Length: 113
Length: 115
Image 1 (cartoon, rainbow over the protein chains, first blue to last red):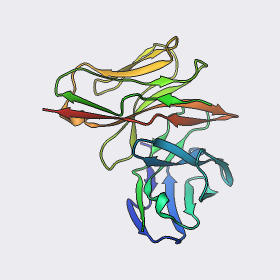
Image 2 (cartoon, one colour):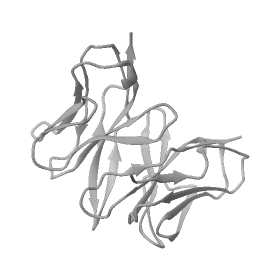
Image 3 (spheres, chains in turn yellow, brown):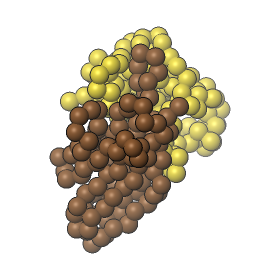
Image 4 (cartoon, rainbow over the protein chains, first blue to last red):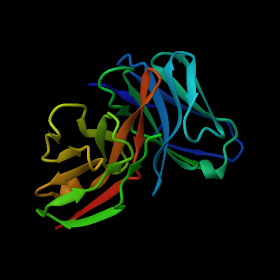
């Protein structure tokens, strides 16, 4: 089975801190994604990557950056955390071509105080 | 750009009753369609998908969805729900971006099954 692992289930950070959310997948998928999930808004795409060192902005990239130095690892960075970034963050991976369903991690619930 | 509409934010239903969760998408161009389920405090799991072929697709736990191209819909149905089906359900459509795909999600429908 495909496994997507997010490093933390719960995080509490202070306003202004730099925050790193880590995601690792074990199926050699080219595509990796970071979504943010908020009640009533569904999942919104922050950034995605289709190859090592490649990244593309999603629908809500402001206040975030990403890093993909290795194929299996995709990191989301909050440069200076703010309270409006309190949310559930979901990482996902998928193949580039063919059957393009995404496989999700368990999510990281981030609270910024 | 693609968009997905799930009109019902919450659907309450009694155990063993039938249920339909509605999903409409914005384009009739060839698409891949998906339903995901999210149980409390968990990530999303793929429930079923339509890629091509038969317009009726089924999951292993009794859900089914029908792709209707003329109505741009992909509604999810189950003839008899269980308490354990209580979860949030997300409809998603693929969108081509150059040589790769990204998923566009609806806002989700919370299914509440009571005894």
